[in-house]
Image (cartoon, rainbow, N blue to C red; front, side, top):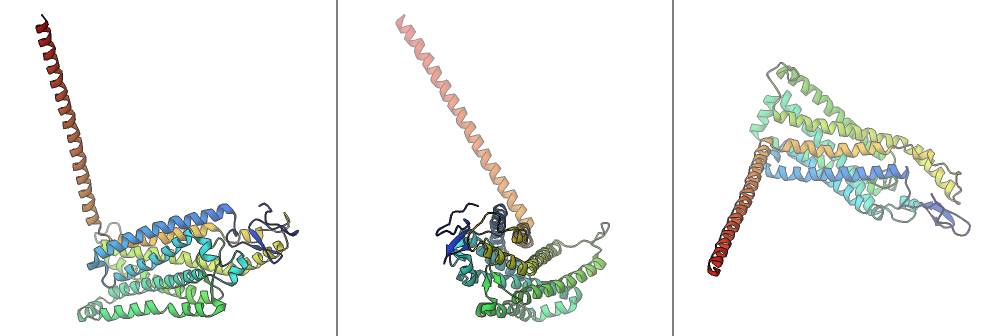
Length: 397
């Protein structure tokens, strides 16, 4: 980079700014990786979140349209996951619109890290709450599925006695309230405050061990318990239906296949995002130390070749974030597949095709009749013209 911010004998890099006779990184231009990698990360984030929002909106519309089946317990838990995902992708899209204006409280990045913006805290709250809340909805849905497979008589009895509404109320209250204590602590205690963790900036997360004990560990437990229950469910269904045997005539129903796809998509996303965040947390100490050393090296002026960016440049790969965003956008797609009745979609598609063909046929025949009438008019005019010519010639004679 060129040296463009120098005054009073101190020359700063172009992504640094001079404050109090030293150079500090700029919040609106400092990047922890190469410019190309940063662009790849930003554009993939925008593309994936935009697609995710489209899928979420369509899923919500489809769920409202099919409310008799989609908004009843336990299927409504899938709908709640869509609501959570919608809130998260909206925050990410707002971030993309004005990333630096929303996350930079000062021109100096160091000042921003000491005083995170209100939107940074808000994005941290949304991300922290939504990620745990989604895991809870997923876990309770798997637990209900497990209960119906292993205890069908008791499940039917609960349904006949009307006890499902009390179970639903309990599940809803637990899912809504359990993430709140950690969020309140992160907002109240300065040590655990939500802050920027990546440059260029994105969703803020909590610092320290709080993130591990309030997010990573609970999600590990929920995912592990849910996966164990799903393995037991699949094993039991395999013995009853032999659905893994190609020669078996007993197959899973479409609804069972759809819900298993929803469960599986969240497992893939959950496992990957846990690994991704755990990797970030594990390397945060090394990253912060390398970053601090680099900032101190650049503080009293830029000297080409003196300060090495390689100490932190390659610690985090932007492509892991790209995969995380893509997987995130696939969750609402699997939920949309669960909500939609493809037979109705096929009927609607056939109607649209039929109407389109009818309209095109009408336009074609209308154009053809117009051309035919034009030709007849032209022939009539030409015959009249020839007759008048003959009359004129006879009169002349």
